[in-house]
Amino acid sequence: MNLTEMKKYLMSLSLILGLLVIRTSTSKSQELTSDASGTGGIIAAGPSSSVKAGLYILKQGGNAVDAAAAVIFNLAVSDYGLFCIGGEVPFMFYEAGIKKVIVFKGMGGAPLDPKAIEWYYENGIPKNGIRSATVPSAVSTVMTALETKGTMSFEMIISPTLALLDSNKKEWHRNLAITLRKLVETEKITPGSREDKIRAARDRFYKGDIADELNNYYISSGAFLRKRDLEAHKTVIEEPVSVSYKGLTVYKCNTWTQGPVLLQSLKLLENFDIKQMGFFKADYIHVTTEAMKLAYADRDKYYGDPAYVTVPLKQLISDHYAAIRYPLIDMKNASHDIRPGDPVKMKPLGGKGEYRPGEKGTTTCVVIDKWGNVVAATPSANPEYGICESLGIAHNTRLSSLNTEKGHPNSIAPGKRPRITLTPTIVLKDKKPFLAMSVAGGDMQDQVSLQLFLDIVEFGMMPKEAIASSRIYTNHIEDSFNPSPDAAVRSGKTAVLDIYKTDLSVVDDLTGRGHIVNIVKVPIAHPVMISIDQMTGISYAATQRGKRCGVVSPVK
Image (cartoon, rainbow, N blue to C red):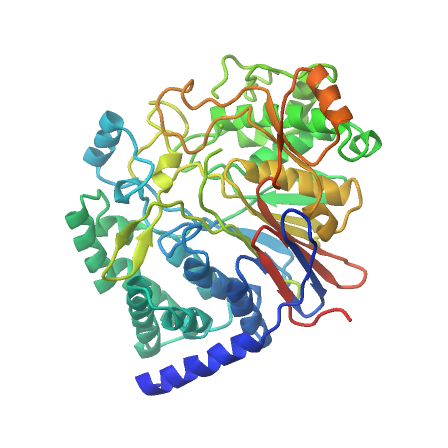
């Protein structure tokens, strides 16, 4: 296909995307919610252009990975500021044919140069700009998923993004389109299988002339990253972490994310009759808050990149550990202390606690195809970006999710991945999809995911109802975006509890137990979710706060 033919193709594609109607209904609450249901494939993600990109791929016969790849690349343009092409994206995939969940480890590492790491310890980790960037990993993550579990070409899945870039007038749009077309060019001229072609395109970004140009930018901008960091980067495919809860299996990414904190919270709450307490009654809010405090205390003391530190994860999510920890929850009093346990010696308390949220940028992506394959991914990149203008490639600022406290599991080291808040969720029932979620909102993400899960499982809500329901957020945690070496500086507002939508009697009750209640006027975090009715095969999606959902075959 020559340039003229490509332009005509993209123009026709743009028209096709404009005709794909996203079936939603909206509620006139303080914050817009949307929902959709269907059987032929469904997507809940960011702005409508990205949802349409994924729907287009599903309509062309692509699977969930193909569609998610189209969505995520498109989000780098449509949701720029919440995600960028040089960002990161934890990517979970359930493969219907083998009934198994895998994780694409979508996070880049710190620079490999030991002198760069010394500089960070001496000067601190900046919160934005190119010196706060890890190796850009999103391109590798998505292309590795496409190569190994997709069915389409990179040229096909990137076409909606190129159409979007061509319709805009910013200089970086034009430059990024040129960069992406170089990858398409490499794919087309490379001999061999579909997988060989996609791998070659990926390698041009990380090992070829694009990497050379990025290296020149790194040197000229004062960055510590170099081409060797790009060459060394690899998207690892790994097993997820999981626990069982009332006949469901809940899957999360490992401790290079905060994901297992949701699993720890569930193991504690399993010891209480949540349903009997009643939705958003004072007892329910209190016990959920106190369980999260205990789980997050362990997150902040033990979690880190498992390739660099030994995390006692098996013990942390064990029945035994939950059994000795849950009695610490006093139903009459809110704890004002940070209380990590000792999962190795199996003691309920394990010494002094480490100890809040501040993320500006994250978006969402959940896809289910007509075959029952599922993707749950959480693309992110906090501004202010370091930008290689000539390539149109903006870089993440995720290095600030490491810290400079020597000896801490999440302290910076050469090549080490930060322990990030990004945390998609897949839930199975009898090895078949039951629920998938992605939440934007920094440290809020797993707190909100936990509550949405309980809304569905304990209180029988549908996604639309759960998304619009009341929520809480405990500030009783460490700030995942404060790289200070001092745990006290990383600390938040102990015992402060944000609440969205409740009545004064509940507030009075919680205040009487010692909670410092702060009423917020907008929903907490930015969730999207899809549930699957295993009897009918109908999927139900719901989103909130600027996110959208759409279906291939809507329920009449």
